[in-house]
Amino acid sequence: MKDAIKRRFGMKIGAFCAMTLMITGCTGQDPVDSLHHSLEKAAESEKPFQEEQKTLEDLEAKENQLYGDVMKLNMDDYKNIVALSNEALENVNKREEHLKIENDSMKKSESEFEEAKTSAEHIKDENIKEKADAAASHMEKRYTSYGSMYEEYKKALQFNKKLYNQLKDKDLTRDDLERQIDKVNASYEKVLKYSGEFNEQTEKYNKARNDLYDAAGYHVKKS
Image 1: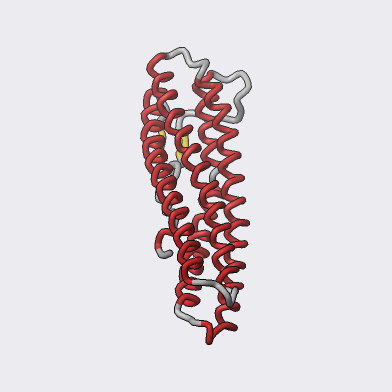
Image 2 (image 1 turned 90 degrees about the horizontal axis):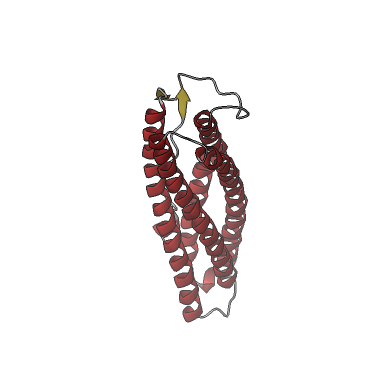
């Protein structure tokens, strides 16, 4: 169990400032304006998600260190094994808390995005609608990838808990330990797979959204 613990979310939704319009709400607006408003609200809703990345990364690095330290010990150092395992269990609990904050942020973003999809359905310009549909497709795949990552990461944390509780068992056999480590590693490999898909869809969404904004006549700059 080594670097597989990292999720490696390298991509995020680009934040943009519209230079042509000040959008204050959706009611009564042109569907393109409403779409733009909802997309930006979806991006804004992901700020907590972005903020949690560094915290989770630090906790993951700490867990790797604790795991390495405890695996260097033998039963002659039983008290230290217990102390390090308990510290690692506290780490897992903290990651669960921050993962929930992250997931809540993504759920809010997804809810905002549903409004964007509704607006896109009413766009009459075929070129703009085509680009809106393309952006929506990548965003939906992005949410799906995140959802899969989230569920697998939760599962991995449960495997972690069992591992550290097992390490405190003086009767633990090497075979049982290796089987649990294999479960942890396999789960984190899936996490990496889903986070890679998430990054890929985020990159594609950002490009599709830029194309959409260009087609709709929004002059944008990165904030």
